Image 1: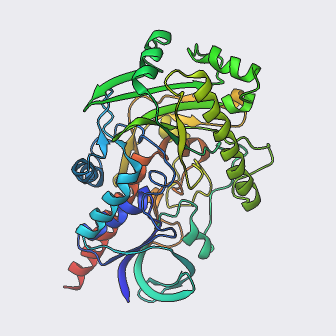
Image 2: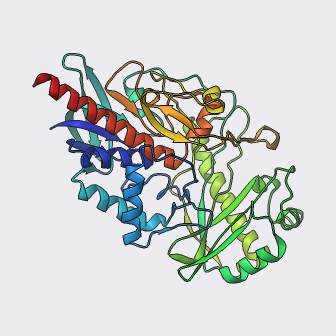
Image 3: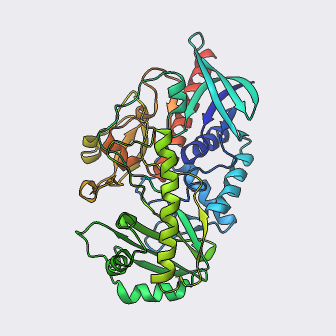
Length: 429
């Protein structure tokens, strides 16, 4: 069968791309290698989506997502105005319903193994594998939302050079059976810094967030607790690299953890499958220790237990494509104007490393605009990337890789394709 558009990868960027393309009437196929949509949000437990100022540029998908999520009570608008606190389990159902409603074709447990570019009437011939079954199809356009640029790799496309720096990964988890009222009262007593600890009550649920890292430039209220745990041998010092937790809508006795940070050697890279596999084991080992720490040292956790461990590492950066435009750190710091804008963001340059002295958090002020050309292959006009494989240098990438931006990337790619197809049809008429 031939499609107008095939999207590979059903994570944040891929879902948005598939939804918008189908909503706009394109014959669309979404190919996902696992059995569930959502990627970092559902399988990775990356919660909540970080707040950005998107200036309402390519936010149609996120607007529809919020409406669908509200039907299932799968979303909370936090006191700081962040409307994107989602329930990861319920979003699995929400994403399915959204794509069903726009009649998008979806293949689960399917991966591409071969892609051939046909220059006459430019299109792609794609070979897919579902378990042991091979499928063959053609498409005029492809959006690679696989995060690692899988289609770009199959087509031997050029990528950005690897940076000497490496963004640290995280393996997230959730603990349940927490007395959140008791924990929140304790937090109020020890931490008055609302830049770190916030507590909100809404819909008969306590919502909260707090953090601790090994950044000694800040006065962390939880620092004495972590130091005691390290001294007692409950935690290793490396376990304290980054600790952050958030409430989950619809889970009143649960908290989601943005940790542990995966610590690699200087010469290790998560693109190496053996390093990646060791990182998963390291992450689960750290989760067990952090869980024990919470039960012993944090009031309200006495009867808590680890209920969810993410099915995937939270990887911030891997392969970045070579696009028609490469976003640079200078573009982030001194925003430029572009004719064709994919999204806007004011998220900081945010670099997490293996060593505290190399971490960076640089706020940029006014929102910067990212062009659609950063999503389009430098070699094929009908091949797009959306998600963390966007064309950008290392520092710039750290400011544009967040989930809300990925939603907008997927939407921008599909809208650009839609208007190209529409324009070509008008020319033929």
